Every structure is written in C-alpha cells, then in structure tokens.
Image (cartoon, rainbow, N blue to C red; front, side):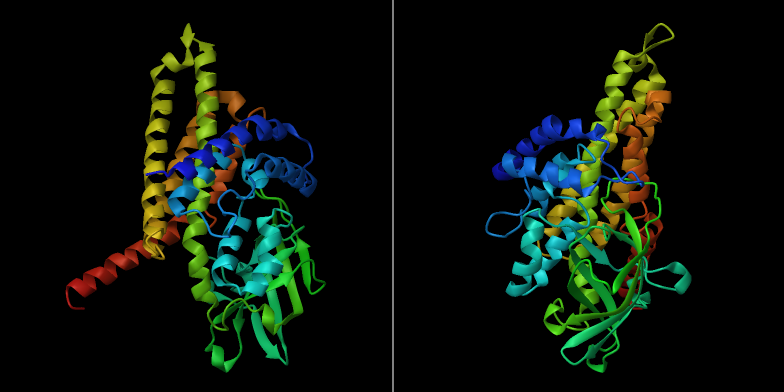
Length: 394
C-alpha cells in the first residue's frame, strides 16, 4: 500500500518531470558521447530544488523513504531519461547516498553525503575492473585493486573500468582488496575527493546508453593516498558493505526504467491511435493492438515485482535472492516493452524524434548492468541446489 506522503511526492515529481523536464530532452548540451553535460544537469536541479522535488527519496531529517515509497517516487522520476538527473535520484548517486548514509560516520556524512543530498555534487563508485586483467566484474571476489596501510594513510593501486560518472564527479567510493593481515584478505571502501591526480581517466568509451553524465570511464589508480579516517566502515568489510548497497541500488534501476518504459508505451500508444495504414488506425490492426496490450500486462507485472521485492527489503532483509529475481524479471520485461514500442512505431521508432529509441538502448544496457540476467539465474540455481541438499541432509 502506497502511503499518503509517498503518493503526494510522486504526484509532484511526475508533474515536474512532465511539465519542466521533458522539454529539456531536445536540449543540445551533450558531450561527444551523447550524455548530458553537467551544466544541463545542475540547471535542471535548480528547477527541482525550487519545486521541492530534489532528492525526494531522502527526508529532511536524513532518513529515507521506505523502499515501497521510494518505488513510486523513482518510477515518476524515470518518465524522462533526464528526470532522475534533475531530481537527484539517478545512478550511481542514489545508491552511493544510500550506502554512505548507512555506513559512514557523522563526520564523513557531513563532508561527503551532504553535498550529494543537496544535489550540488555527483559521485562515482569504483569497483568494476578490466576483464583482460582478470579483474572484478559480476564477481567482486576477483578484485585485483589493492590497498595497504602506510602510516596514517592507505595506499591504493589498480585499474577500474566502466566507472559511471567518474568524469566530472566530486565524490568517489573506491573499493580495493586489502593486503593487511588483520583484514583477512577482505575488501575496503574509501571515500575520496575528486578529481585527484592519482586517479587518472584513461578513456571514456562510447556505449549503447547515453543517459549518464560522464559516461563510463576506464581509470588508473596510481598510488592514491587516502587518510585512514576516510575508510568507510571497517577494514575488510567492503564486500559486506557492497551487499548493503547492492539490492536497493539494483531495485532502484528497475524503478527508474519502468518509468521510462511507461512513457515509451504512452508514446507508442499515441502513435498507434493517430497513424493510419491499410484503411484504419494502427491500433485496430491486431498485430499492433496486441503488442500494446502485452505492454500493459508486462507493466503491471513489473510494478508488482518491484513492490514485492521492495516489501522484502523493508523488513530489513538484504533481499539478495529477491532482488536477483526482480532484476531478471523486470529487466527482461522492460526489454520486451521497449522493443514493442519501437516496433509499433516503425521507422519513427528508430529515430531520435522521440525518446523511444533511447529507452530501448538504455534498457538493453540495464540487462547487463547490476549483474547480467545469466549471473542472477546462476545465483538462483545455486540456491535451489543448496536448499535441496539441506532438505535431503546433504
């Protein structure tokens, strides 16, 4: 059940995105990768601040909406690819704010979290590493970036890849494997100010998605020195903290892109009702009408899956299994929705005259980000095997 406060905020966010942000979709302030420039991002955030919808999922006292409440608000923000940027509900910042808020000390929250919540800074999460080096991707235990103590500092070395928003970010969370014996080979997370000369952006490749400011950078970390008081939580507990961030961040992707697919469905439905072909409106051709009907069904199933998983997280559970199930079900359903929208609109659907083709591209990338479908299915299959062995005394 949606609370009154969440419903009211979601209504305000939706009105703001539809009336103030959608017109910005044609704004040319983009980098050569097609991603919005920070000038555009912060201009939209000024509007959101004035409208009272900036960082709407975090309350004035610093507490968060419940996951179920967050869902209706983030879905509304996702009605435009620019909506999450304007409302400060975007990835990776939304997940980073959640992690810092749950793990960091009061001093670190004041220094690193406050500017993020206020929408005056962007952040990046440095975890994924180059595959050719055997580094961490979907399997964080493969991490090869290292950290070691040196007096009152930690020294970090390694390479990172697909670091969303690193270019232009002011706050970084760097994850590295500890070389210290008392950390037992565990990982550490560090909060760092950006830019830093020891963190070098080597390349920002073109990718299929274009909604993230700064895109997805390849980075070299060369003898980065971080004061010990900027360690996030305790040494060696980095993998545990990653789990704290993982499920909510995974689910919030589902929320935002559901909003995008709802909008794409609206556009495709409008097109099908206006376009004439073979003597009647497209909507009256069963092949078209049935695709839109299937979209309605998938959208409702996605809503219910998100709400179910959010409810599990609201109990305090890590929700690892449930969020894997939601990630698979939602990302695959959203792909079907976006694909049908392109198909219904024919030639227009593959142009940039609407956001439909962008939503298609973004959702295609989402099927990989935060764990590919196959990794989540493999993880679920392992649970089935564990449960079977437990039930049969294995």
